[in-house]
Amino acid sequence: MDFSGKAPLDFARGRLFDYAAAALLASVLPWKTGGWGSLFATAVKLSSNKLRRAARAIFSCLSSSCYHPDVAARGKFITFEGLDGSGKSTQIEKLARALRSHGVPVAVTREPGGTLTGERIREVLLHSTTSGLSPLAEMALMFASRAQHIHEVILPALADGRVVLCDRFTDSTEAYQGAGRKLGTKPVLALHEILCGGLQPELTILLDNEVAFSVERARRRNRKHKNVRPDKDENRFEQESRTFFGRVRHAYLAIATREPQRVHVINARGTPQETHALIRELVRKKLKI
Ligand SMILES: Nc1ncnc2c1ncn2[C@@H]1O[C@H](COP(=O)(O)OP(=O)(O)O)[C@@H](O)[C@H]1O
Ligand SMILES: [Mg+2]
Image 1 (cartoon, protein in one colour):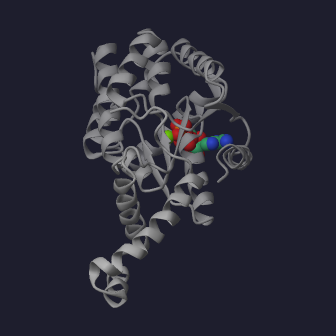
Image 2 (tube, protein in one colour):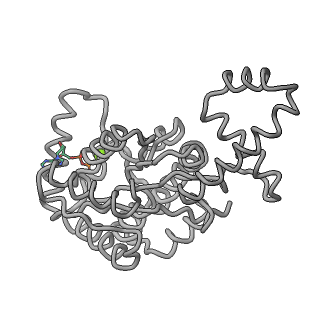
């Protein structure tokens, strides 16, 4: 798998591509299907999205490079990062609602998890009764979940033209396992290259707040959840020390300095609505959606 520089393609280019393909389809199909009547029947049977994709497939094959969902991806990949309790889930929900209200197709997903296999791995990784997991095993499980997630959810959604909002991605592994567990950045980036084909988000929103604030918010939320869903225990990382989370935050900010084009730090100290307004503005400016 090699996605670097190929996916996702720009929306505008894709649209132009669609119109050209639709025109081509319109001229070829009547001849292939025996007239306009049967073409109309075929068109009614297909949803407009399917028609669009079929048109693109034909056009791609005729224009030498054959259609492949990985290459033809046209959505946008946005990841949310930050400490537990920084407000990722809250903000993803708000952004998803805002984009959908403008008719933008959105897929919301998370890591570890996002697939049936991934959710099982998530339980092992986050359940507070999981003990003695080595840092390397922890990193490997994170990537196992991610590789499946990319294959089963992220790439198909991008190929379908969706905006994918993903709660955590490889930056989390670099921050938690690389810095928190002291495995270093190098093995994380090497595994990312091998197992994720170097897939990078167009935009990463890093919600930043002081460690104490985030940890306190997460603890409060977890206590609340425990009363509602005692079976749902995702508190293993909560047992870590303030110095561990200090290393995680520091690593996140270092990633943002290293990749300023992709990673944008958002001050997450305000109210949920204030933070949402900052994110909405950033997404509008950077991705034009
Ligand atoms: N800006 C905010 N101010 C105060 N509380 C917040 C804010 N954003 C989220 N919360 C609350 O803090 C807790 C953690 O937020 P959450 O979105 O679950 O964080 P994360 O997904 O990053 O772990 C939740 O109980 C949430 O309602
Ligand atoms: Mg969350």
